[in-house]
Length: 310
Image (tube, rainbow, N blue to C red; front, top):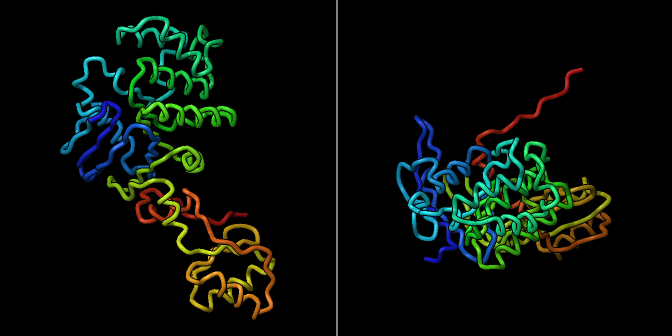
């Protein structure tokens, strides 16, 4: 197995009467960004902590380059991780934080300066890390993950605290890491960012894998044979289309998504009813839409709408 591979196979984990993982199985391979997504409580954090040997699984295995993480002599040379950007000594400078990690892996100052430059923190590296913004802490955490130049990277919510410029930079940076044939596993709730960056996505719910697919295939499956219709008479158009047994969803101002009717049939029905429309095109779902459809029955913590009191 390539060193640039994170493999999870049949992981099971219980905490008392709660099942956290129920046969979790997937692989994050080299040369691609793999999104790791699921509702709160789905098992993402537990899985990542088991990969790092911070928690023990009741059954199954988690391997980095074919070996358990805890068996690796210099683990940061195999897997770089960012689980909590704020987990640093606030009085230590960013550079000293990295020097401490580098020395634990037998690395020198030159590599520290290289990664500080890579993540854009060279100018702030001698300031106490406790004064860093969350976005700067994320950059420092990313530098720590890369300090030993590992073939595999695992990041938990790396976009948190990033400004728009930082998000664009990070998206391109992670794509570049995958382009170097590294395995990049990214847990995130930002589906829009993953759609523009990830090659593959693993969707989980209630401790199990719901989908393990390329982003393109997942979006294509969610898009189905839907038709997008823009009409100034959306309410009347929806009623006319629903009467035929089609599925109609409001997708924005004056925008409907119709499932179950061919485009030609939609045109004929609207014309017969005298209803105007300015756009009609095949519907392309977003990764967010695909995700919500897949996890509809796997959300453990769901808020309920309440009316505002006067």
